[in-house]
Amino acid sequence: MEIGDMVEIVNKAGRILYYGLEFPKKIMYIHEYSELFREYQINSALQIFVETLAESLNLNILAVEKTGVYLSPSHNSPFSPNLSDIPVLGKESNRGLYALILMAVAAYFFPTPDRFQDQGYSSVGVTTEKLHDFITGKINEVIDKFGEEILATSAESPHCIKLLADYRKLHKESEINSKSTALYFIKTAFDHLKHERLITEESDEYLPTNKFRIFMEEFSTNENYLSFLKGILLDDQQEDKS
Image (cartoon, rainbow, N blue to C red):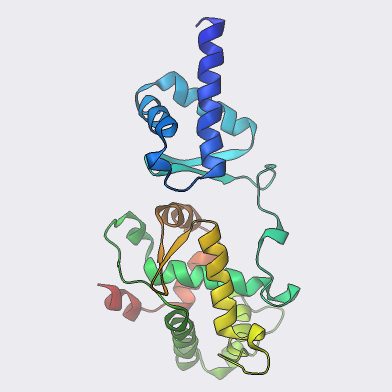
């Protein structure tokens, strides 16, 4: 390969990773990206350079598709999200509730790992009220199954149980302090997910994007997520979605 050809292919590989990191809106309509995507599909050399550059930046390539380049930064990557990127939800100690809400959204639309492969998942969106009811409904099911004492947390309690206990203490709404309520936290989390283009909003309903599906499919082997599904979600959610 001539030096000029190598420079060109390295530049193209860099641009592909750029689009993965920038993730612009309506990426499939950007002419440059469409051309890069078509070449990436058939050019093994370009694929190798993209993978090599990504590895050097500690980026994991989840997928390169027409709808975008999906990257997952390793913990030591300069592109890895910082704790400060996660919504505070009122105060620092509430950051964990964002994780609970995120897992609840994923579980709502993808109640079993095989659902990530189902391109025809529910087109019915979720509202802040509906997600709140979903979470509290599962908390009540856990209590019915294991007893009220399951939420009497201790240092040995699973993290997801601690989060459920914290969520249960929240008021759904409040005229005195609306920014410390369950619905406010869910709306704040939705706003953040929308900003990250992980969900879209239509008529006060939220739907997961392809980016969300791919990211959560990668996360679906995470022990906390599997524990959340196993310990909180029961078979009726799958029945509701079928």
